[in-house]
Image (cartoon, rainbow, N blue to C red; front, side, top):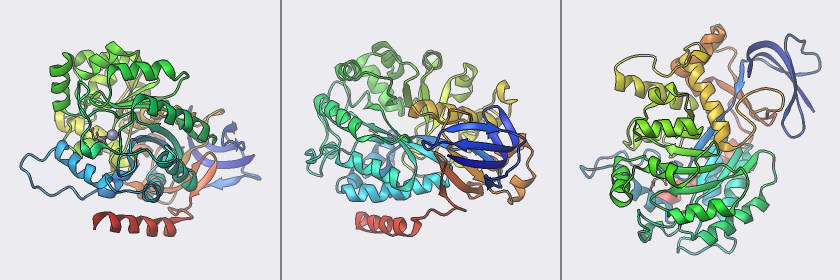
Length: 454
Ligand code: NGQ
Ligand code: ZN
């Protein structure tokens, strides 16, 4: 058992001072007592807040951040970016996946993410065959997470087709393609590989473009249990139009028709949704998985957050393509996109959080993220896991912030550099912005970039 003492902490019940926290060997909080003394406990100086779950990541895409920002084709779009991404993924080895994920996961920890949902679809060899161990790359990702100390929900992805109506896969998609049976085998295999309390496994369909209704039915009927279920949906107007052309319905409406979409589900992006779809999502309790910096980078569109929040819809944030890895930036732009659209200020807020923007988007993203990853996180209370950040007690903005200003000061006035220490399951993994393996991890990652850009 560990005993920690926080001078100031954001518990599920609000801000408290001089709090003693006991954490068991599984990283679960077993006792919290406020207005205590620090005797015998490890002292934490700066304000403590829950660590953020990152609900959507394709870790290998970190390698190409900043490499696709040169205009070539006047019609540059999501779809031309995807061609560059396909070229990148052709030759990455499992070891390079591991080295890339380790670097990225340390970046995440330092940027405020204490857990990640890895939406993983690079299953096959460069020739499109299964590896001798079909879970080779999946296991490399699990290992990377364990080695740096971030918590992970691995989402092995079913990806079979290149477009609606079961269009044959493209040559560049061969590393992604599995049939339903191969997918179910992979899933079973991975179930046996997950033992740590900080790791979880979920189901995942790449998109309505990449799987058929039959496949969704088969997977959901075969795999029992309350696993998280993720899918990319409604990200680009073109895919909405194609869905209407081929299926006769908009993607979100169609998904709700064919599946019982409930709180297990995360609808990633959900950018283009009409009033009915906003209602369907909010009522079902599913999580809208918003990845604002990637959505901005790819020119996707703006999620109708203000309408969705009026219906108290659930949401969380993800860094997706990792063009930015920063909780503060993701949340700031979640609010700013709404302001730019509406030509107004202070858009994303709720009575429950006293109409405070930072508090609303931080707390809602914690809860939505926890639900999306299917883990016992996102709030600091007895029975939940001790995943938290310690902000810099000596930063002028943090040192002087009132309780209600603190998250706003961080998100709107500062950046990641105010995150000093990071704990996952009660274990300290970042010490004054350093990770114990920083140097080795950085060297390996630099070598991967060098070999990939040649
Ligand atoms: C992906 N990424 O699978 O990595 C997708 C692009 C697609 C994002 N949507 C490819 N951000 O959707 O076909
Ligand atoms: Zn994605």
